[in-house]
Image 1 (spheres, rainbow, N blue to C red):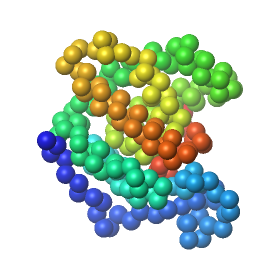
Image 2: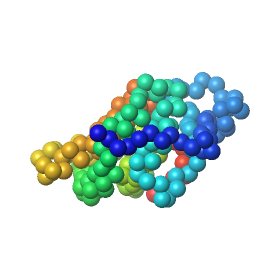
Image 3: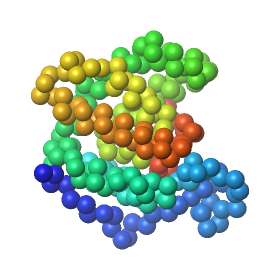
Length: 208
């Protein structure tokens, strides 16, 4: 049974909804013809460096819960269903996925993705940087700060592997990571997101 309990977000941490086009608070936004879900983002106070992994997941679940188009996706239950060891499980499996991502960055599959999506060569370095940033946010628990395109990269890298690549004792832990990535991607697909730069939470992003 999971030992993770929903503590919610303290009352003094106020979430705000902003327009993704004009950057204004939704009360002051005058934009018209906004796409469902794609042109809004929620903002919470910056994640503290010492915030535990499980609290970051609960923070993400709160963002999902507050999104008007995601009310049918029970992110809170998803987080609660994780075992009490989930933080250690992600920490243990991170080196494995870093290796998978490194292999994916040098694979023909990623080059094919570049060709299919018509990504200019001068932006390729940024794409590779996105791989690293996505890994950092995934294993830090900052799931709302991962862009749709970065989830695609994560999913593709994980899909290059198979269960027999891992020790039996690690397979269940690895499955937690894969289920998280696939679950969020499925959530975004049902939301109808098409903008590959879309993310659930707006935040300062380092330059790649």
